[in-house]
Image (cartoon, rainbow, N blue to C red; front, side, top):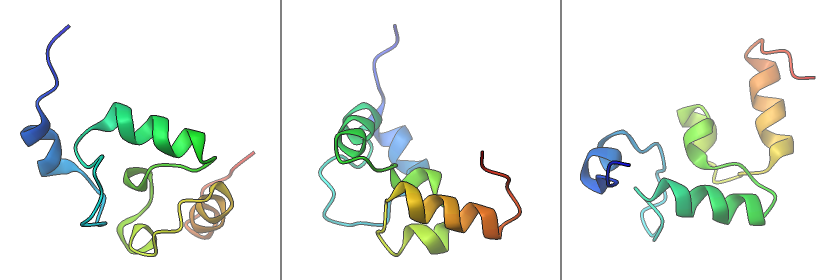
Length: 71
């Protein structure tokens, strides 16, 4: 398996939280948010991500307003 290239990942990381120690470390980020019963910021549209509300409920609200059907 190819080694993770953090600098390349950081170029496309959607997280706007400047103090995030997991920024560019996707596996750590996903594990952290899963533990907190949340979704990582990169799954949210930019304006919604900036609220720092990572809850699944908020994600569903945002995405349903954008026309996505969530079952």
